[in-house]
Length: 201
Ligand SMILES: [Zn+2]
Image 1 (spheres, protein in one colour):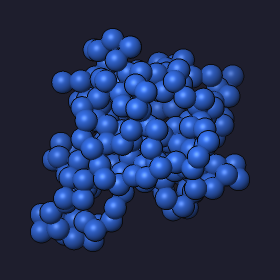
Image 2 (tube, helix red, strand yellow; image 1 turned 30 degrees about the horizontal axis):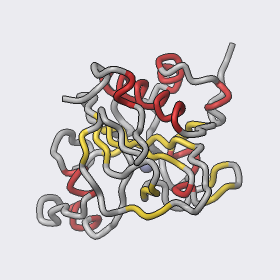
Image 3 (cartoon, protein in one colour; image 1 turned 90 degrees about the vertical axis):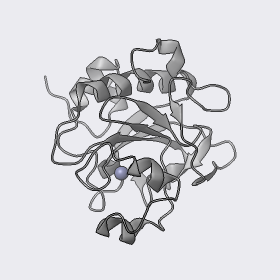
């Protein structure tokens, strides 16, 4: 089991963009970032496969283009879609990595971050196993809160956004149950790095 029980050092990406604390499940669904493009945005998502179910292993299969179209009716509609994210945080808080941070994972799709489109070019995508209808687990917050500061230490990250922030009307994740205040507190994220959140008080 990997997760926040590991030392903070283990969450720092190495020179190739792999995080030692993560279990590596390489995805072929990536390509090179544009030359000289700084990695300055973290995008948070939720995903569950089959929808609303956890722990099936099908997210890993999906990102490795080996989803079984006969296993579930929904899979037949998506099994040929080639997507990925850099990371997945399971319900148990295990960290899985599919694409090195130095490369461009295919997670955001058509997107716009304050006028900068094609967010995959400059972002790191973190999928949190879950759905829009259920709370996330404490173990997941712990792992995301360990990973985000490590990414901020290695890359010039200036903001953290939800997929729904950069693809409004098209995407709803990570959804209403994601507690941004909890992440901000646990990961010591300055309010200015959450440009879509409106803090009070
Ligand atoms: Zn998403």
